Image (cartoon, rainbow, N blue to C red; front, side, top):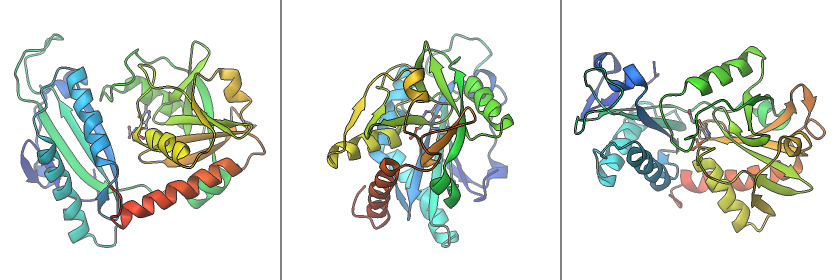
Length: 294
Ligand code: PDD
């Protein structure tokens, strides 16, 4: 349950306990849907155009007709954000969660055409990374990437990711970093960057990874600030030999991974390339907060 008790469901804004979804919704029965998580800094949605583009791509990828125009999505998102800004002025950062499922139909794996999709959304406070995570980093384990072959779709059917993150939690670490056929793909709920000899590397986009909005921003900022970076395949050995490892996501932002499989990464502290990247990212975030960048 979210802290802020207002949700959007199929065109209506309601208290969360009044929002009702049919148990025959294909989202519940099959996990047949997609979702987005959009960070909000100082009341401004972070990279809204990019998030809406990914949402549009995901709907097309699973053959759900987009139920809203870009303006309608933007209006709905801003209404949820402004509700928090107005009623909870102390909350600095938020996140908006949006889920679209194929809708309600008699149970059959193959789907009927033209049923209205279910659209659900809410805004909530954003989890704040603990300062010690940024200074000392977090721990991770490597796991075989046993997910499906369409990981570029931000699907709500997340059972493999859930089990991988749970495995990480049971081993008291923050993330499971996934290896498929000897190559790094991504984290159970994040993208991964490594640094070796000051060169920043991240796997290329494709069906093996989610095209993370935070990832894409970092690639853009690396380019803009003329840092040395490349989008390239990374072997498991490259990962194990890295000087620095970072994880990125809308809710975790950029975190250094300083222990992998119980061993130190580099000297076991947040590295210099990370610290520089964090400064650049924070400056960008500040420009969103004060409204000078969208
Ligand atoms: N997850 N890869 C996976 C598998 C993810 O689930 C996520 C984010 C990312 C990072 O994408 P972005 O930078 O756009 O958040 C990469 C979200 C936050 C979640 O499921 O809660």
